[in-house]
Image 1 (cartoon, rainbow, N blue to C red):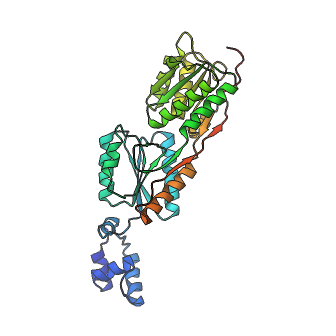
Image 2: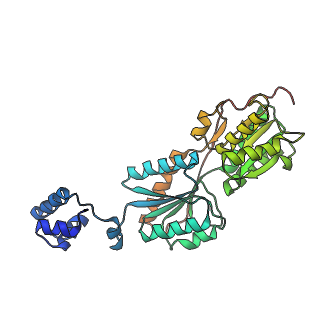
Image 3: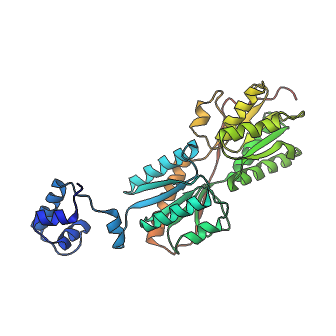
Length: 334
């Protein structure tokens, strides 16, 4: 059985209060007693309870993380980088996958707060973002990751989605494309990327064709279906901007099923630069989000909030970067 504080106190011949003082490094304990208690703790493999520490109002050195879906490579990379950055400063991460369901997300927030986590990183979606604001206590450290929700008074670490969308279209235009479709995810980030894409087209004198803009769920299957709706039109685009790499891979599958080669018949550009973009053939041209730097800033922002709970809300925006692969090419003729 797992050793308890009572077992340590009995074996060391001291009171429970003395063991507690040794664990929490408080009170006036002789060095001899401290060493004896520490020796017994090691011998019995006693691990102080994080929950017990939380009940005394002490930090648990734990952050919560809400993601949409761990099966999505983007969120897997987000979780890994956040965990690495947290461990570097002595913290651990408790991760919860919400499937973008409000009730599931709220239940996890309630559970995590009962466990007295020291802060929360939100990288999932809510259909009603006000529910998130209402679910956390005042001055509780929260960071929105890769989310820009102006209606929320919360710290934010994100990438410039608008600029990313703009640069994706600029790249396609530089290759001679003017018939450009968009397959986007149903999210605030996706909406901002589409706005940037539309502006880039407008600035270049290209008429935006709403029939070539499709909104789908964020999955390979939905990306495949969404792209098919555009590519099967009699007058189809010669290039697609897909608002994440999952949708991009689905769009590549759709093109293959329709007998279109990528990039020979259709250029495709994604967003995120996840592992998927590197392993598909041809290598996907995509817009990189600097996940490692964003993760580091998110952890630091949580720590700063812990020290200064009433600090002014910050919005930290990282710049996207075009990663040119082999899924886009110069248009020979339209």
